[in-house]
Length: 125
Image (cartoon, rainbow, N blue to C red; front, side, top):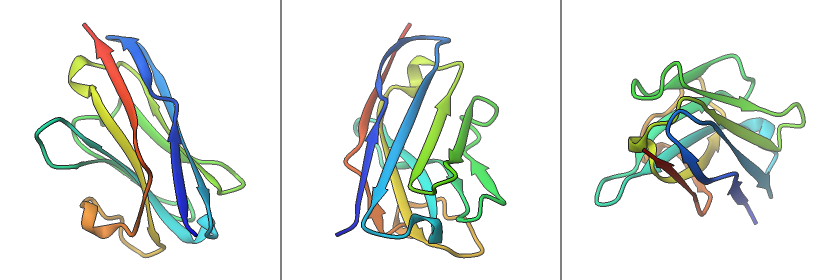
């Protein structure tokens, strides 16, 4: 059974930092591209960042470029999202996602097969 579980969310002041983690089980995560998405209330799930299975490429949404960094652990069972210079508009639930490795990084939710339950990030002004 494939499971992805996020952690690391919480409450932080504007300008602060958080590091989200995603634990992968039930599949050989080294064979999967990983992504992070978020879903503001009343809006569709939106792409945040993605990383290829072999870590040779990353991609970011314009809104987080230069502030967020996606990475993977050497053991490949973990994915991370380091979030710096957080803004109140970053407040929402964040999800990690996985899809079988491929040459292209997907920026839409339909491009991923596996999802975590999400972790809440709240940035106060």
